[in-house]
Structures are given as C-alpha cells and as structure tokens.
Length: 142
Image (tube, rainbow, N blue to C red; front, side, top):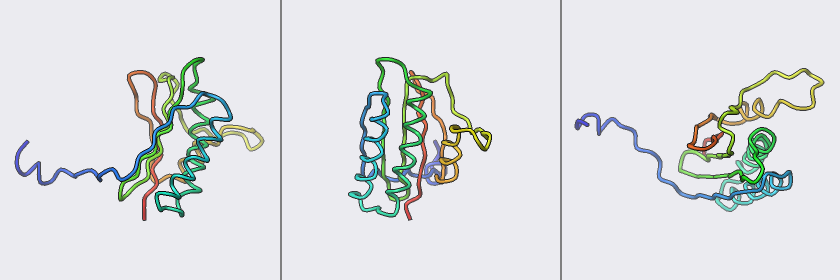
C-alpha cells in the first residue's frame, strides 16, 4: 500500500456498543430477540431507532426461523452500534437459501418481510459465512 492509498482509504467507525445472542429456532425466540433489541437500542441512547430496530430484528429473525432453520442449530442476532450506524445482523445455518425480495399477491399472508426491510433500512444485504449466511440491515444514526 502506498502512502496515498493509506491516506485515501476510509477508516471504519469505531464500535461503540455490541450485543450478540444465539437463539433456538422458535417463534418465542423471535419475540425475545425483538424485545431485547428495542430495550438495548433505548439503553444505548437511540430511542428514535428502537421501534425500527425491533421491527427489523423481527423480520430478519422470522426469516431465519422460516427459511434458515436446521434442527438442533441456533440462529444469531448481532447488534452493533457505531457513531454512524446501527447494524442488525441475523445469521442462520442455511447458506444455500439466499433471501430475495418477492412481490406477493395482495391476498397472500406472507412474503413481505424483505420489502419491509428494504423500505425501512438505509442499507441491507446478505453475507456468506463458512456455514450459513448473515442477513443484515443498517439504520443511519442521525
């Protein structure tokens, strides 16, 4: 790396807060993870983001439960806070089942989770893992 490259390379925001919990793949775990996220974001001083964070955790954890669960394997909810972003990452063991935005029929009871994530989050995406995948959503800290 040259001196010019070192100067122009962006430096990542330092990590201010972090929480990581593994959950059993049950509906009750989705509720617990949503409540934990809202409580932590409030405690971290970002009350305006708490509701959106809870909804994003709920949608991503539900997708992990419905599409990423394997019997006997946990899913992980990982929250990180920097000066510029709150990142919500949910990891599950099913790396071959990648999420994608669908356009469900108007009377379909399911299929809108990632539409909600895409509208609510400032950024979202999928990262492969050695085993499984991580789906993340980021909210800008303003």
